[in-house]
Amino acid sequence: GSAWPPFYNKVIAEVQQKNIEAVGMPKWSDADQTLAKAVQKEIGKSELGLKEKVEPLDAPAEHLNGGASDDVGDISWNVPMVYMFYPANIPELPGHSWVNAIAMATPIAHKGSTAGAKVQAMTALDFLLKPELVAQAWDYFKNVQTKDVKYESFLSPDDKPAIEFNKEKMEKFLPQLKKLYFDPGKYKTYLEQLGITYPTVRSAP
Image 1 (cartoon, rainbow, N blue to C red):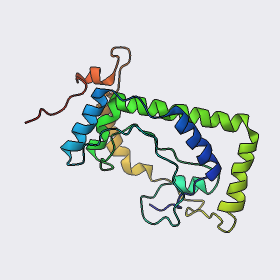
Image 2 (image 1 turned 90 degrees about the vertical axis):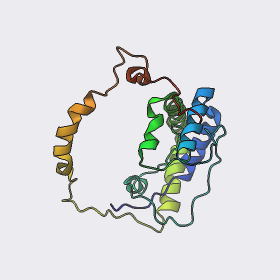
Image 3 (image 1 turned 135 degrees about the vertical axis):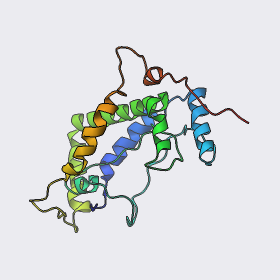
Image 4 (image 1 turned 45 degrees about the horizontal axis):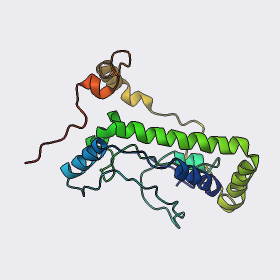
């Protein structure tokens, strides 16, 4: 895939960071930390567990080279925007792998996603209630970000997503996936539905 490199808005980032610091990190339980460290150990990583301190806001990179293509980069060249990374997964895991899906049904994901949702809500309210922030974000977008670089899409007006490539796979696997959907009417948590005790970890030798 091809996409423009992301360029995030300094004004929005600073407002969001203030709210991240106000919300703080989730309160991890001993069970949360036990699972995190066990997973990290299982794949040969340092047993650091879950982070408990908010990371500072990074300065923008001088040059963005490499990395995955993501159409959010194109969005960032059309409107002021930022990314937010929230602590809904176990650190130090390899991307796009089965091990990165372990935390999704656990309190780790729920607590991290809830913290992220609070930050998003607070940031949205800041911009809704303070029009001067909206003006500052657009000023940065127009007079800093796009002052010398103008966006031009890689797509032609006739390009369409090739959704037909996965049609047969979806028809085959969707009925099987539906059997695994969470049923909140019968279970309090997805782990309960799966019959998994939290945290389930390998016994020490």
